[in-house]
Image (cartoon, rainbow, N blue to C red; front, side, top):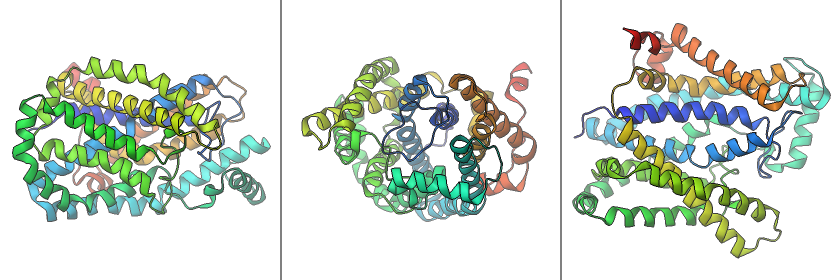
Length: 399
């Protein structure tokens, strides 16, 4: 059993959470939102936000699901399968259910307030009912899926609940595959395994228009393609520990995978844009878009994971603080972003300026609330199983 702390994954988890704030902030200032996403943007937009959005979205959630699977396997090693399922019910399912009646209604109200402000030029925290109905009806007219109930950003917890049910089967497979996996990891076969997994993930990407995962997963009704797509990354993360091959990733050079991902990313965006415009779908263009997006995702994802293990796998007060606060930041950042975009909506300022204000308010609100009100409270116990007493990381480094 691996008892050591993976400091690199602490840094990676914190980094991905910070990118989540950036991603969701950028969403409201897209100049060309993905045609499958039912969102209303600010009057001030920027193409820079589109590039930033697509870049972060290409790898962020696959990285999160890999880490979720990896830490689930560590928990099984430590406590066993049944105790792990009970723990995940307490730490994932319970916060998800509480979030549905607290975080979700507040976020929805603020998002609708922003939409009304953009559509009618008003600026009320609680919009008039007829105005709210009008913008919702307009959104549904453009995107019929928008009428379906959605957990919004809580979908991540929702999908994890499904994936945790697979733990007994994945653990059984990991135990039986471990002898073969360890021998593969010591040789050169691991690269072929990764290639095969990337090929499988390309197959799971086929059902998506534009070969981009921008549809389906945001609703309560389970979206089968999304379960397959993200479930594969969860399984990969679980097997990295379950098959004892995580150490092999330290030998892979992140720059190589980063270069592959960065070269493939603009090609993927271009191919997806063409694929979206073609009606009916052209199979050859769709195949190209699928392959380009798969290469970009796996290149950037492997870059992040291997960089975390190779360069950041050491104690860090910054990584520890951001990692321990990440669960609260995940829950709280969306209502803060929705409030912030509503706050600056009437201002005729450049999109980049608004974006930086939104991200700054969200980050400040998340970390100040965590530091002074959350980490030592019962909320920390509810989310993480215990209280923390972390000092600000810059103070820790100065000591």
